[in-house]
Image (cartoon, rainbow, N blue to C red; front, side):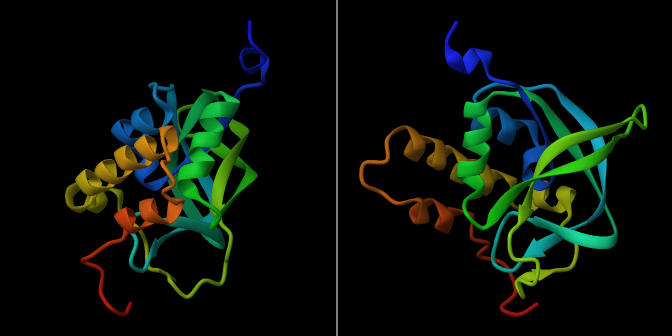
Amino acid sequence: MTSSDQSPSHDVFVYGSFQEPAVVNLILECAPVMVSAQLHGYHLYRLKGRLHPCISPSDNGLINGKILTGLTDSQLESLDMIEGTEYVRKTVEVVLTDTLEKKQVETIVWANKDDPNMYGEWDFEEWKRLHMEKFIEAATKFMEWKKNPNGRSREEFEKFVQDDSSPASA
């Protein structure tokens, strides 16, 4: 048994594009168990010019999402890498949708809670319809980069998750 096999597993609350099994399976290179949950006290924002959302604290906020259960340190690192430095990992309490049980999990929060590029409410169904294909293409390129950077920077990946159709001002 390797040391990574002995590491504690992680449960991570995800929202946005990471609720889509095709995205999660690609990034984690497996199909983790996903459990529906709600996160209170946060809002799911659109990000101007991006295909993905962010969350930030909000007194009356409520986010429906999924818990990815039993992630390894390596899988958690993959999530952190694709999210980049604009997000920070934080421990939060969620409520399981089916049982109403409360659970402490990790989630990824937008680091700049005052970012002027956050606006409105991000819509999962709209994203699936309009942007999922492009996002999966970008995630595929990211995973290729992760395995073999060949001198390319992470910034090259970031341009793939830009939303070409977003309004100039929101």
